[in-house]
Amino acid sequence: MYYFSIVGDELKFLNNSDIRIKVLVDLLNGPLKIRDIAKKSLLSYSSISSNIHKLCDEGYVEKIHNSFQLTNLGFIYITILMDFRDVISAITSNSDFWLDHDISALSKKDLNKLSSLEGSELIRCNSMDIYKTHKEFKRLFKNSKNLKVIFPYLHPEYPKLIRRLILKGIKVDLIVSKDILDSFLKDIGKDVVKKGIYEGNFSIKYFTEDIKIALAISNEFVSLGLFRLDGTYDQNRLLLSNKQKAINWGLTIFDYYDVNAFSLILD
Amino acid sequence: MFNEEDSLNKYNDFLTVRFLLASKMRPLLLLLLSDSDYDLNAFREELDKPSASILHGLKELERINLINKNFKRYSLSSKGILCSASLKKLFKDLYVFEINRDFWLNHSIESIPHESFKNTYLLKDSIFVESDEHNLSKSFTKYLDLLSNCGNMEIILPIFLEEHLEIILENLENGDNLLLITNDDVLSSLKKSKYYADLVDFSKRGQVIIRKVDYDLKIFLTICEDFMSLSLFFKDGLFDNSCFILNEYPDGIEWAKTLFKSHFEKSIRVL
Image (tube, rainbow over all chains, first blue to last red; front, side, top):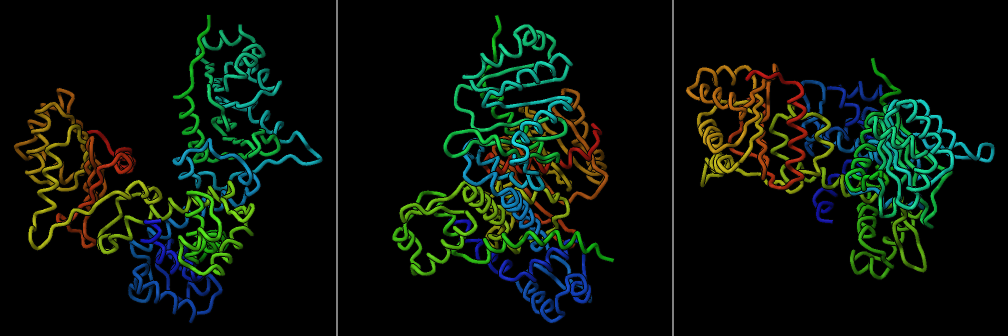
């Protein structure tokens, strides 16, 4: 509340007018004359002129000869606002992924970097394809050169898939909840687990507390699945991104679980 | 001349942003609900606003699924939790600029990468150490004092000052390490100075690494175990020795390390 009391008025001033935001966004590319902005935005010369002068009065824009350019503050404010817009876009464009789901697995730091998920694609099952997320998950796995996965649940096909990847020499790091560890090991095959660990291309750790996130990260993608508020895993939705910033976001979450998980000790 | 599609895309998504920020009531409601559930009476007591405007704000937030209403009590939806967390970050991101607008307006920010501005919430506990008419060297003295208790040092040095080097050498004598990034001008002054031979000796002992960049450095950044300090140049190109930003918290040091890294990656080792 304290921080809002300091910055709230300025944010209200900037966001009260669509034109002010448009002008700041346009000026990010460099100085412009009012008529250039008018041509670009199809707004009237007079409404741009009046708003640009208000922006000058508040210190966001300055006049250089006949053109206008962002001040440092204008540049900083619009850069930060565009980052905020990316977060809001990541949330609203995948609204039903985030709505009514348990997001307790995401730390404050993860939430502060949500803009990394901007442009993600929501894979959703539908009546014509009720296994769409599952198929997509499998497809991504098959093409990966390395893989880090957090499994909070067991699907009979996943251990088999992991087994094939280990045997192909793909680097796989797994974190699973303790409840499903034994079944996972059994289904991968203890001989393959041992081989993978021995050859250094496989590791498996377990988490004693409830895991409320399904996360898979490879060299090419990150996918994220969440639990519903009733405690069941939502198999119908999967958030997917192939952007590097999203992959890095996923890696930070994986690293947190990795540090706090227990290593498997084989006989 | 213009890439209109690109420009349109850039501000099209601002609709929801503007919905959230063009009113003071909507962010206030989201912030309050991030701490606990509320009913209308509790909102009224907290905000000292008429029921009608509170209810109007609540309805708008409910309409886009940011809040839930259950038996007259309001709570955040999971989507609302995300929006509220993002709003908090936004307010903290802007805080360090809003408390000293003149400082940011008058100084060059060209050596701070754009990405660093997206994480300035990490700087929220910073203070501006400023000289005043009672003590013109207040910021300089304070910096030297901090530097002398620094421990291991990571410094981006765009200016040459003997006082700095004397303290840095004292720290090195005490066993601390130095990772220095500088430019050609400062490096050349360093080489001509009486301190360079000592720096070379410490480098041979593995305590000193000096790297240089081939562009103008417009920041003086110091990162130690317990603090980070950042000085900037005025827009006219002169160094401002009358004010620096000081942050003595892990978050501020983390922000500074990211900034340091961005210059480190463009530097080459010279000692």
